[in-house]
Image (cartoon, rainbow, N blue to C red; front, side):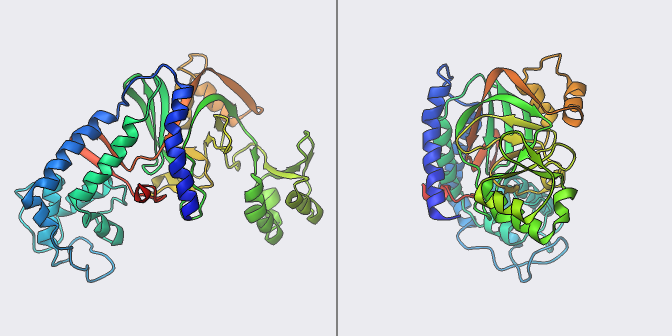
Length: 383
């Protein structure tokens, strides 16, 4: 990601606090995630000050010898690995270093991977090795940085918290977490990050059209349609003029009109639609929203930054139930019916729900277990 974009996201994170104060004037003092991270802070302070723990990081783990270490293989780094995992609480201190990488040590590495947002395959590769080499003193600084972000963040009794580097959405009612689900966020690799802000979700749109943003049309879709004209019909695209008129014929003239801004591309509602069956709208300057997606296979990935900035949700029906305040007239069968059949329909929420998009690379739901996540947008490095 380019430095200027990183700086904009960092500034956005600071403005988020100010915006939250404007949007949510009757706010509590602390977020429910704060207590767990404060306990983790105290724990890592002890680790960072313990000479025996420090000694486990005095020398780096040796090279793997191959691209990765798989179960059943020997490795010169096993004694150091055992000491580190025991110090971090992922492995019992009573476990002696084995001759080969196997058994409880593989299980401990898998637990470590889960806490660090890595693929939980028990295989030690480049990313897992890098995370294992981070000493507690650096993790302590990471906790301090994220706790500072949480301390400054007010919250409303009912709100949605979108944590970008964790790829997780949480829904809160008071101090209680009511819902948690996987999400997909803006891509760091393609330099389309999800911006950080606070806005209010105001309505749902069932069976939405996907109005292709001009940047995506220009850089991706128009070139694709010129290479593969059949894609236009196969994926249910059409042109529209912004005044209700739809054109279902693909021509070079119409593609040129899209590039000049006279026409726009959109995808009709249905099983091919990129937004799936439902869109969650919280109007903002960046035109970011949450939505369902037909590409559900991507939720199985550990790292889930694949979008152009919008937020794809794994459990759209559960999220709809929450933001509709569990309205009995909008039960699961009715929501599914609205997503799968009928016309495009906008449903106003009974009351706006604040959406807080944050950047926390350290989270402790359980006071005894802190999770760290890769700094995908490079924001921790700027602090």
